[in-house]
Image (cartoon, rainbow, N blue to C red; front, side, top):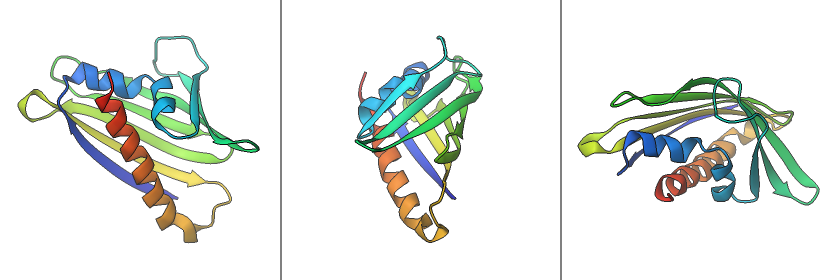
Length: 146
């Protein structure tokens, strides 16, 4: 099991940074070989379920997630979402917080715990590094693209 933390500052108002990070299908456009499908009707709320399907050919796995906390930002108050990963291969959780930053910017804090079933602990450092890179790039791209 690995835990990692990402922090970003974006030149965006809170509500726009929040929108860019929590429109779940957008994650599939920035994470390689991944497609995200929302399984519950909009709008996103507690109980929303979506699946990130990653891989190619027969090497495909689903990362099924459920929104367990949903607090969009209001005026100058932080937004917070917690996702619980309920897949057969990937378990854990993710939290995304979008709060006011300096100069009208948004400060993003993304925390995640990943547990990849059947992956021995000896690979934790490698998994943590790969996850930081993949999710860090995804966060950067999501925040840059309207």
